[in-house]
Image (cartoon, rainbow, N blue to C red; front, side):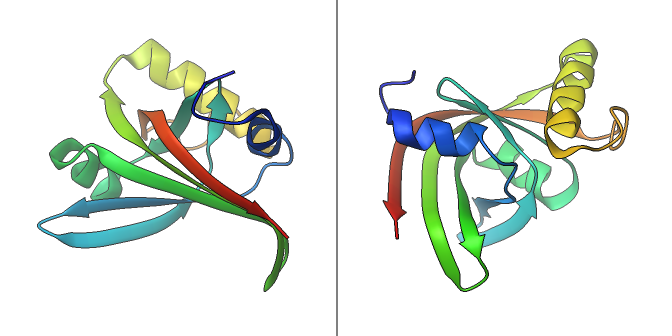
Length: 129
C-alpha cells in the first residue's frame, strides 16, 4: 500500500471500475477529460492520446478524480494529485492497455494506439457520504 493512499481508498480505486477524470494544465489553462484507469500501490495507469497526452508532456503535474454512487448522489469521491510520466515502451503500453481494458470489460486490444501514462500519487483527498 502506498503511504499517500489510505487502505480504504485503495479498495475503492481497485474495486468497481469507475470513470476517472484526468485534469491537466498547460499555459495556465485547465483541461479535464473522462477516461478509464487502473490503480496499483500508489501508481495510476491510464492510456491516452491527443490534448491530454500533449498536456502531460508539457506539464506532468496532474490530478485524477473519481466517484461512485447514483448520479448526483455519490457514495465516494476521491481526488489524487501526482506526477505523470509518459511511457514510450511498446511492450509496456500493450500490457497496460490490456490490464485496463480487462478491468472495464473491453476487448484487450481496443485503443491500442493510445500511449501509457503512469501517475505517481503524491497526495489524496477523499470523502464518503
